[in-house]
Amino acid sequence: ASNAMWGGRFASGPAAIMEAINASIDFDRKLYAQDIRGSIAHCEMLAETGIIEEQDQEKIAHGLNTILKEIESGDFQFSKQLEDIHMNVEARLAELIGPAAGRLHTARSRNDQVAVDFRLWVKDEFHRVAEALKGLIEVFLTRAEEHAATVMPGFTHMQTAQPVTFGHHCMAYVEMFGRDLSRVRDAIERMDESPLGAAALAGTGFPIDRFRTARALGFREPTRNSLDSVSDRDFALEFLSIASICATHLSRLAEEIVIWSTPQFGFIRLSDSFSTGSSIMPQKKNPDAAELVRAKTGRVNGHLIGLLTVMKGLPLAYSKDMQEDKEAVFDAAETLDLMLAAMTGMVGDMTVNEQAMQKAAGSGYSTATDLADWLVRTLGLPFREAHHVTGRAVALAEGKKVGLEELTLEELQAIHPGITTDIFSVLSVQNSVKSRTSFGGTAPTEVRRQIDYWTKRIAKA
Ligand code: ARG
Figure (cartoon, rainbow, N blue to C red):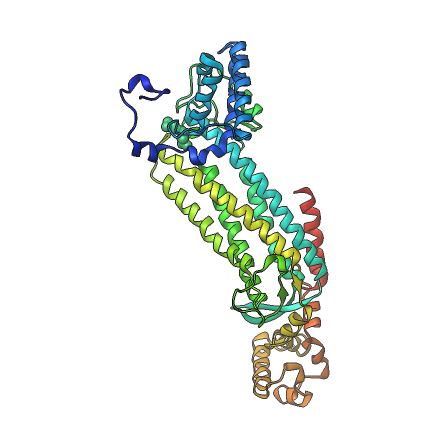
C-alpha cells in the first residue's frame, strides 16, 4: 500500500529494505514528549491566528494529550511503517479524532518539527548535565576542604616534581568541571531559539506567529532564517563537543584514580560499592568503574567525529542524512550522565591515605626546587647557578641513597660554602607546600581561597 502521508503521488509502498534503512522510530521515539509539546504549541498558535478552527484545535490538543498518556503507560503501538515519531503520533491522532488531525500539519513540515523536537531534547539534557556537573564539583569541594593541607607528590611526566596538596589537586578538577559547566551555559544561551515555523525550508504564507510558539516552548526567541533553521545541527555538535571535553576530563581523573588505587601508590582506596573483585585472585580490588569511565570517553568522542562527518558535506537545507544526528547524541548523553554519576560516587566515597601521600611526597627529591630557591633568596645566587648546585646535592644524596634532608651540613657546605642549617627548614614537604603562596599556588591558605571562590560561584551557577 502507498503511504498515508504522501500516498497521493505514490503507486506502491517501499521495499522492505527501504523501510529498514529509512525508519527512525526505534530511536527517535525518545522525542515523543517534545514532539507532542511542539505540536500542542503549534496548534494553539494556529487557532489563535485564525488558521484553524478553535474546535479543531481543542480536538487536536485533547488527542495529543491522550497519545502522551498512551506512550507513557506503554499502551502505544509504534509502527516502523510510519517511519518516525512525528508520523506515528500524527497517524494515531487521526485514529483518535478523525479528519481534524489533518489540520495539525498546516504551516509546518517534519523538517522544522524534528528541529524543534531535538532542540528541546538537547536543551533538557544540557540542564541535566549542568546539574550533574554541579554535583560533582560540590563533592570535590568537600574533599578539597578535608584535604587542603594533605601533602602529596605533584608530578610532571609522571615523575615526582614538587609537593602539592591533595586539596589543590581536587581544585584543579573543580576548575575543569567548572569550565565544562560554563560551556554548557554558553551553549544553552546560543541554542535557545525556536526553529518551529521555518516549515520545510522557506517559511510559510500562512500568518503564523513564531514568537508565540517560541515563547510557549520556553525558547528566548524564534530563529531568524528559515533555511538555517532546518539545516542547523550546531546545537547537537556543541553538545557532543562539550560532552567530549567533559568526558576527557573525567577520563584523566579516572586514570589518576586507577593509578592512585594501585597497591604500589596506595594514595586512595575505593569503597566496596565502586570496585569489583576477581573471580580467581582473592586479594584483588579492581577500579572497574574508573576504567569504564576512561573507556567510555572513546565512545563519546566517536559520536562527535561521527556527527561532524555526517554534517560536513550537506548542502542546505534538510537532507535525510540529518536523521543520523539522534543516535549519536542520545548515546553520548546517556553515557555522559552515567560517567558523571559514577565519578561523583567514586570521588565522594573514596578513602584518602594521607600517610601514603605524605611519604611519597617526601621521596624523589621533591623539595630540590625549594633548596635552589633558598640559595637564590638567601645567598643571592642566580637561579641557573642555584639549579646547578642543587643538582650536585641531589646527585650526592642519590649516591648515598638518602633524602636531601638527610645530608649533613658539612656535606652541603662542601657543595656550597654559604649554606647554613636554615636550609633544612625548606627541605620538609610541609614547609615547601606552605611557602607556595602565589595566587593559585598550592599553599593551604591559597587552596582555601580557591575553595571559597568556587563555593560562592557554584551556589549561583
Ligand atoms: N525522521 C526525520 C529526521 O529525523 C524527520 C524529518 C524528515 N523530513 C523529511 N523531509 N524527510 O530527520
